[in-house]
Image 1: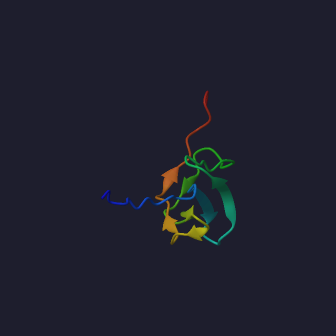
Image 2: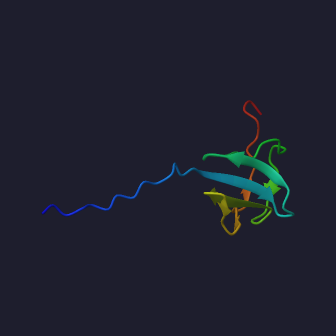
Length: 77
């Protein structure tokens, strides 16, 4: 007698991401990779000024601090 196989059919899972300012204001959302745009050249952004959140099947992860960085100068500067 053949053994029945249990097959799980998964709904199409989509993992998206959000980047928020530390005050909760949404900056950008979508699939990876995301970019923070509109920052002045050579601006220093501190760790935690922005957070990233994964969203999977409608559930949001705990926000994670984005490490600090310095915005690169515009090309040609």
